[in-house]
Length: 304
Ligand code: 13P
Ligand code: SF4
Image (cartoon, rainbow, N blue to C red; front, side, top):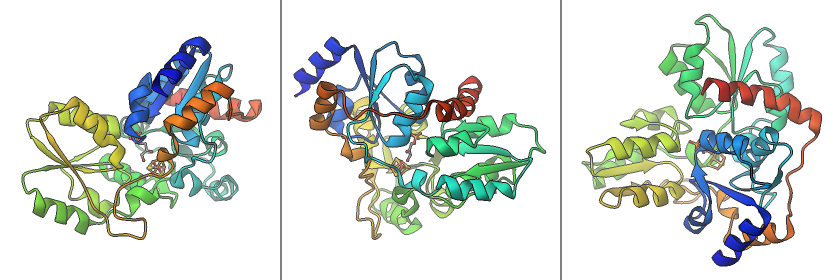
């Protein structure tokens, strides 16, 4: 399967972009693995004819918006994102009616339609920098992630109006899960994604995007880490730091006992191979919608 994928990539001049949360074997066949920011930067600049996006729907949309002449394939069109789904565009449009004159800042985990209603897109890798660069008295609406919005407000001293959305994977991690992991590994450093609830972030030593976590772990003298984000990142953490130890948390929620994004796991070697072979499913978007959604993403890239 891996050889077939490599041959198809070559013959079709295709590039495979994958997020750190995808399956290890998917990360291994990708040409580039990254966080949302790095993946959008890569999508904007690639000269491949086909971009196969092993991630979730909003990521493939972003790639298409940034490079509309390319064919963008997503192995499973139904690989969505609970956070993006927590902000339906009609509801968001009604919400914004109350906040005319506000700058609309949206986290990249949202639909193209929500991006089209936004002034600037941010990722967890650049949100603090971008918000800090805005005038102190700027009135801001932030969507869709409430936890990330609260974290940005706290770190920047802003009072952004927040949409009440969440990621089902991160939002269901509890302080008790971290405390339990700390009991088992008292010397481990706790690294957490800012999509986690405030009560969880309060127990973290380091907070950052997936790429920031990887950078911090590499720079740290510590040898043990409790990883408070989707477990797919363990693959890259172990690959880059074979001498360090990493522990996931075990949440006790209705979403199961592991920190697993089922949407990311919908990307498999089988459907990637099939997508390259058939050049389907292709991610298609309305041209006018793409033009509107491109401005806030390009604004982000210019500030990153
Ligand atoms: P990163 O931008 O940190 O990779 O996060 C993406 C994501 O979907 C987190 O749940
Ligand atoms: Fe969306 Fe959460 Fe999955 Fe990230 S982990 S892609 S925010 S559902």
